[in-house]
Image (cartoon, rainbow, N blue to C red; front, side, top):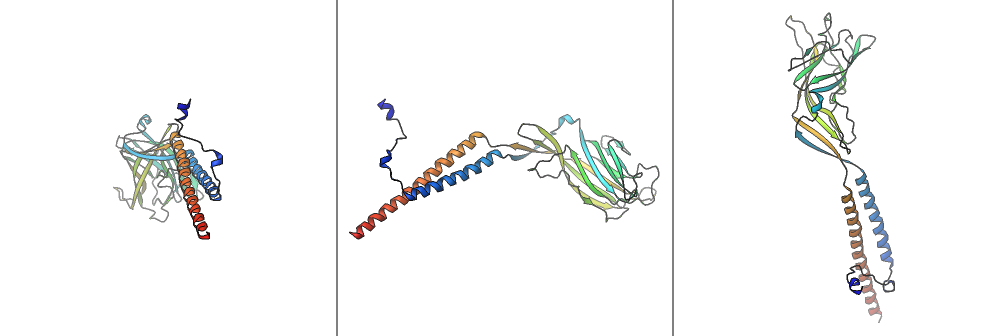
Length: 289
């Protein structure tokens, strides 16, 4: 039993051999407040999640069947709904004029304008889709293609507070003061994007960059037939956002370090103050004697 007591590295000092001081009390209070502040800061960081992003080359959504969902919402305030149509074509041979599935036309300006809303799919190959009068039974003499793009998004809707991406880069694009007879080319570079939450569930979306130009195009008959073109290509680079939380063991290690470090530093400060105080008292007693 006595041999076991010799192994105790936390030996206790009897209370009657310790001396409380006012400076020690002040240092102790400051020490506790400081530790509480650091503890709450670490707890907040432990509860909160962080978003880690990475880049890699791959097709993340292999179960999509080589398709990408597209959502388009555009207003043409000076073009009748009977004239507005959506055409889709790509390098796989798809050529669809007047796409109408999952689309809606809402009259504007007492029937003189139109808002087109549509949801459709495109193949994962370079191509384009465009809003034009190509599907109209009779072409207007001077179609006005001034427009406002409310939304153009690809893939699943992704709304995460800590992820700021270009998922609707053309949202709010205003071309109302442009040449009414001009065609508009929007050159899109689509970037696959993956978001993985804490449970491991993945959501697939697409960001895109855009460049645009405006020009007047003539047909082979010399007529001006303007259109709003969205020419797209896919980037081979995938952006992945992963939701992560600090491990429990790291949180416990940090808390232990805070408590141990604070107590050690506070003990050194208190010891220095006490030693200096005792030395000053001895000096004063020496002067008095």
